[in-house]
Amino acid sequence: MSSNHSAYNILKDYEWNYAHVPSSKPHIFNSAEEISGEWTYAGLPVRSPLAIAAGPLLNSEWIKFYAERSFDILTYKTVRRCSRASYELPNLVPIEAMRVQSRVHR
Image (cartoon, rainbow, N blue to C red; front, side, top):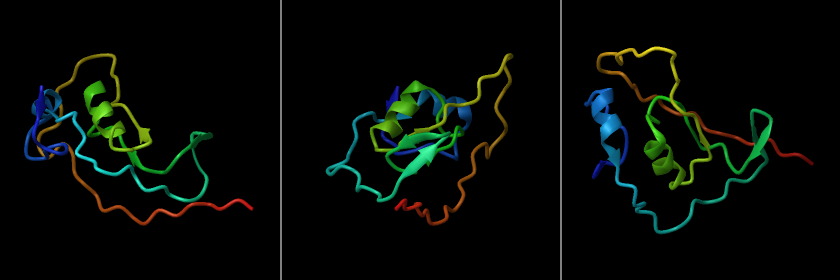
């Protein structure tokens, strides 16, 4: 089920967010601006350092949602060998991002 919100809702629990993926139709009018430099992740070249950690990527629909928005490094949620309930709220806490800089190879 898709919803009219734009990201993981930290006021709702994991199960609600799992079932309510933001609308899969991107509201992007221009493609993402290129980030200069050379970037690698796990030894592989990537177009940019735009990444999302596993926390808000709950299933393949969440991966698709952010991939459509030009995020290049998407980490899927941890797969466990047995079922376990998610943590109580807040189960995802946003952090402030620092400025990203590239390595320029000459």
